[in-house]
Amino acid sequence: MRLKKLTPVMVVDKVEPCLDFWTRLGFTKTVEVPHEDALGFVILARDDIELMYQSKASVAADVPALGKDKHAEQTPLFIEVDNLKAVKKALAGAPTIVAERQTFYGATETIVRGPGGQVVTFAQFKEGGEAGGEG
Image (cartoon, rainbow, N blue to C red; front, side, top):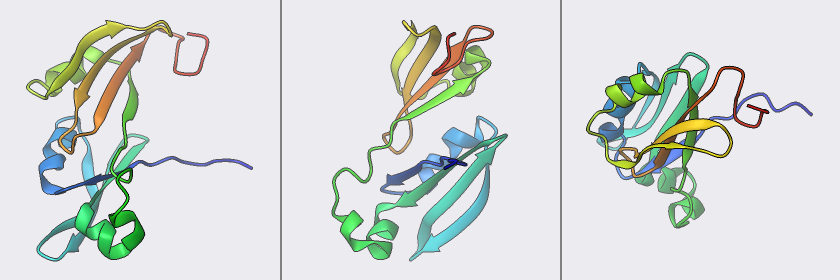
């Protein structure tokens, strides 16, 4: 069995306020699905990274059991980057959880709260290191 791709779907109150956070990092909206009078679902992409946002109302209409599941909207993200300084500059003003830290696994990280409330960790590894590697 080969797993081909992982794309997080973040469930939020409203999709629209989440877009600017990612477009400041160069993501573009590739898919947009309306729900009632707002966006119900979007796909954002950049390079080989893709992520999705779906409104709670859209989830409840699509899969009613998930609309009542308190865990359906908890999606922390871990994103490996090659230039943490540039990420921090692009996201200046975003709510910061950890400004910068060195980890035992060889990363320098910043942790922010995304616009939908998600915890988003950006990690830069030294040359040759990577998450899950020997770096």
